Image 1: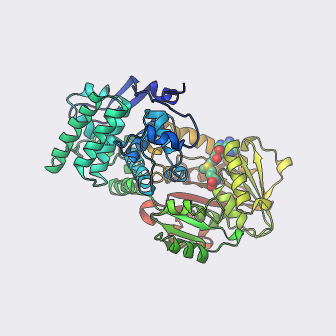
Image 2: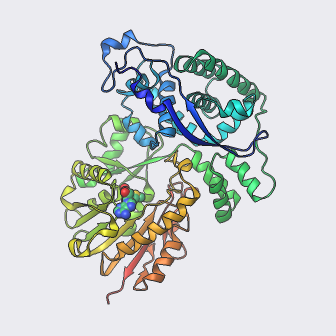
Image 3: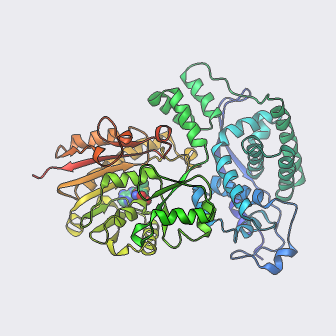
Length: 533
Ligand SMILES: C[S@@+](CC[C@H](N)C(=O)[O-])C[C@H]1O[C@@H](n2cnc3c(N)ncnc32)[C@H](O)[C@@H]1O
């Protein structure tokens, strides 16, 4: 009865796709209406864990499970507006519901995912999203004509992108990848789709073996060069133009390489629960997770791989540690929370910085966490409980611009971690580059100015206002601070050199972490003091 229920989300939709310029097309923007034809499932439970009795009945051993899951996840991310935070994906990846997910969406069953499969899903989904523009450029050039590419079913396109990515970037054996993806296209779509995957991947493997894949030439005027670089490094053209102008082309290329690399993660030991870095390190050793202590922050440990093991060991669920980038930790160092202080965190959810600040209060003082998003604020509350610091956190669900000072009062320190473009965290947020538009930057600037003014009302005389973003864009950072100081001469810059290592301090006395320079996420923070009068 519930057959095909969840396939409906992919059944008909409009979407715009920008195909990159190639020898046969110049930057076309098309609006397609596509029908994804999925084979009906024989029996499809809608929710919950798989019924083991049925598992064997519908088992389809022909399909590699990680590819099936990757394909539907890619569809969901591209068309469902989902958030491809790889860590979240890993967090969900217990494997329990994954096959239900494939069954509901593609209409067939395959075997459950093991740990290796889960890792592969993360790698393939993240990488295929990052490299989308470049992969589409290759697929378009391998198609007979532009029309074939333009009218390709979305699921077929995902399967091709995955195949190319696996061969090109994961160095998987080409013919094994080819066979698996042909099979997936046949089972999930139809035999003709399998033939198409076969034709295109074969041509690709042949060209790749001969080292003769097409490549855009970086030549012509600035715009043409930016277009070529955007294809080669798989970023939107507007970002390439912006970065080339601000940082020069060599730095822009380094930044894009960073964004395309597999992200590193850091864990923060939750000392508020009495869990120390030493204990965290011994647990990681037991779990055989390679790690190294942060050179910048006392409670932080870096790791490149092994997040799955950390999740499965329950370290995050038990509140013993958090996943937090060191750049975010350093913003908290700029706030420098002290026991007994009152702190307002203006845009607090989901609470990474709130929790770290609260843990630094040693049970004395209060962090008031304001956010407009109730759902995210609920996550913050739950995490505060599991971290054992809910006694020093109060949550306020409100638009910051409407918060009344008489109700909330004024605080010693006010952190405004403003909504921003997120251009500093593109290595972790694989899909973000495709969702941001240049017009967003203008809108964000206005919002940031409004929130900055609203946050300023909450600072006590002689108190401190910290403005931060996870962006590397000066329009969102230095320029917002300069504009604020023009409107509010009662504030002045307090240089951050007392709070963070010198390599993070800018000439103007701000904190700035840069992916290329520091191998961390990009972030910014300014510390401003309100005069006593
Ligand atoms: C960059 S995120 C904050 C991240 C958070 N500080 C952390 O460390 O986990 C920005 C937050 O601003 C919130 N926000 C956006 N507009 C807001 C407004 N007008 N008032 C209050 N919060 C707002 C969003 O809901 C989002 O949670």
